[in-house]
Image (tube, rainbow, N blue to C red; front, side, top):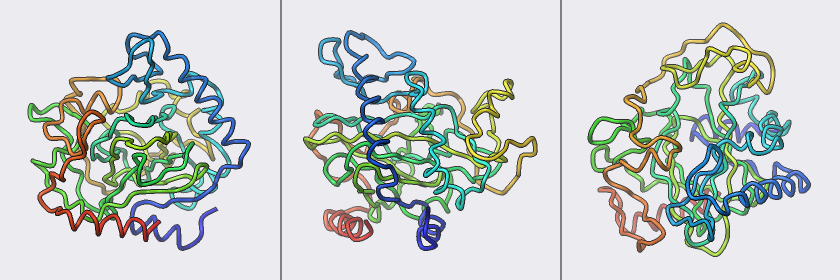
Length: 320
């Protein structure tokens, strides 16, 4: 499913976008199921095992920012984890034997208030014995510059694992740019039509702004690893081997982990606020992205000027 150019782009830049991978019927069913699950937020007063709520949620005006374990809410999501076109796209990147982590998640950015995600690396949450680990985002809606697209820092997957701990030393799932300056002038917005997929390496730095448009931006994420990439530091329970092996959605499981050099920073002590990435990031000292009730800020990054931001947007448009 991937061209040689797309494979080379992923290896070099750490990400690739594959447009219109889903057919119309599959996309339509994914949207229908998601609407059905989100409707269950009406009347809720707090997060559940499945639904992660926006801070501005009320029982009368439900607002959901994430479906945390979608496979627990509807079996169609689990079917999507092993969707053959997705597997065909991943095989040249991480091999034939592929395991999905947990049950994925759906990040929901509703018009006008969809929550931002601060800069981070997925690898900080779940280091493995080798880094043939990546994430796939399946677009339920068109993702454009205005509705909070995922942004990535190209080639950052070849660099260090940055500190994702707060000032008190607890894991917080985000990079504090005041303590770990990053040059974000080359950040790229991943834009594509609904039914497309994004693929990014687990070590790639990425984040996203609030959705300030009148258009939704819903993104179903699955994290995958080569079957011989085994999780470290208790980031996944391994006592239930049968359950662990059932998450091999393509190919065969193995009891022989492959060890390969890769930088690792253990995600301990645990985050003060458990539940989701949004909750983890509550203790992040300095936030880069504004929330829905804040005006769009001038960039905090020491290396970004207004002209650099414009140049970055132009590069992003050209790349996409």
